[in-house]
Amino acid sequence: MNSLPDAHPPVARPGVGVLLVNLGTPDAPTPRAVKAYLREFLSDPRVVEIPPLIWQPILRGVILNTRPRKSAQAYSLVWDRARDLSPLKAITQDQAAALAGAFGGGVIVDYAMRYGTPSIAERLAALKDAGCDRILVAPLYPQYCAATTATVFDEVARVLAGMRWQPSLRFLPPYHDDPAYIAALAQSVDSGIAALDFEPELIIASFHGMPARTLALGDPYYCLCRKTARLLAERLERDVRISFQSRFGRAKWLEPATDTVLRELPSGGVRSVAVIAPGFAADCLETLEELAIRGRDGFLAAGGERFAYLPCLNAGEAGVRMLKILLSGELAGWVAQT
Ligand SMILES: C=CC1=C(C)c2cc3[nH]c(cc4nc(cc5[nH]c(cc1n2)c(C)c5CCC(=O)O)C(CCC(=O)O)=C4C)c(C)c3C=C
Ligand SMILES: [Fe+2]
Ligand SMILES: [Fe+2]
Image (cartoon, rainbow, N blue to C red; front, top):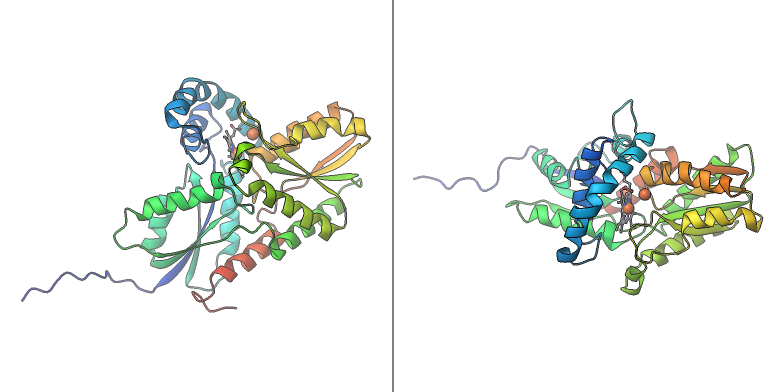
């Protein structure tokens, strides 16, 4: 008698996978690579909430013919030439490497980019092939936003829709007010300021902007950014001024805009600032070029005297410790708690 094919392919050991996910980035600082990346990123209806019939002709007819060249120049200013990677990908890779082994031998830590490479589809398949039947997906966005957090879920669900035998899933919740996150931010700000040769009069927390209408539509992002800044200010026992950067397109975006704030501060008597970007888990084009280069230029040109950009948590000691705390909390029941 013929036996039925085994519906359960042999798996050496049921494993657990952790997939860190960040936004994504081009493969090279060239107009061609940036164009491919922007086409994918800006075609996501979670990112640009304009009906595709209206948006796609604008994207393909105008934006993809102009922006890639300008953005590629900006990327080339911050590119990690030693590793030939964008800073965002290099740092995300370092975060995954720093967490390897942190949760015990049966847990594989990997990373993916929501747009570009390595893709979520590729890394989920790799984790599954490596025997992970339980996967914790960790979108590395402290403040929930439909354009970032929700779209990771969309993509994971899309990939799983094509799998016959799919893993069990968990998602790291947004961590905008988690004590481990606030403590890590406070520690990195304290040590960043201690290393400066001046005491900044003001700390500016610059978050990535969003179209203002998303707030009216119910996206909590704006409020979560404010809460992070308030908790950090309380913890540091000093003022933290909030602003929003990276405006895109003509619609009204969340305010105040970081570049405007930096240009107006000197005439209001503030001559020295430290800028932080707590909404970014890793430094990237938006922090290293927009804040640390253009932001500095704008502030100094307007009469500012001292400007410091303090790095994101990245794969530094405070940041990795925070990720260990957040992720091991979500792994409860899947791995023996240490
Ligand atoms: C409609 C456009 C955009 C929305 C909405 C948006 C939201 C958003 N983005 C981030 C984080 C990052 N964005 C990055 C780059 C980037 N963002 C946009 C546009 C929107 N972002 C563009 C066009 C670009 C590409 C660069 C450029 O051409 O200016 C990055 C950096 C990527 C890198 O490779 O370094 C990050 C990170 C968040 C958190 C967010 C909403 C909260
Ligand atoms: Fe963005
Ligand atoms: Fe930008």
